[in-house]
Image (cartoon, rainbow, N blue to C red):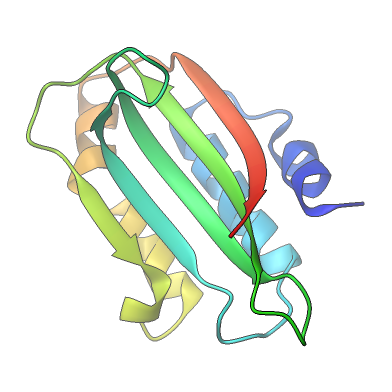
Length: 133
């Protein structure tokens, strides 16, 4: 099973933002090659990537394409909402923490997730995709 199909399989029954985040964390643990350059990223904010303003709560897992290659495969999970119009934006890499578990604890405690949950913000859509760097 390829990386994207693995993520889709793990998150297929997700209904809430927290379900998707927990599924992404499970995916990262399940598909861990032990390479120190396998990083996770959280990026949030109002962006116009689709041509209209939307709020993105995006998680990315980066894998080395092959041991002898400088290319990376990034698996993206974009949780998308209507624009929030709050000063909520983050860019957090997992290498800022001792381990991936601490990274996901910071995701769970983020101001953005707290705002989404406290205000019962409804999901607009989920985009799952991969890209090479």
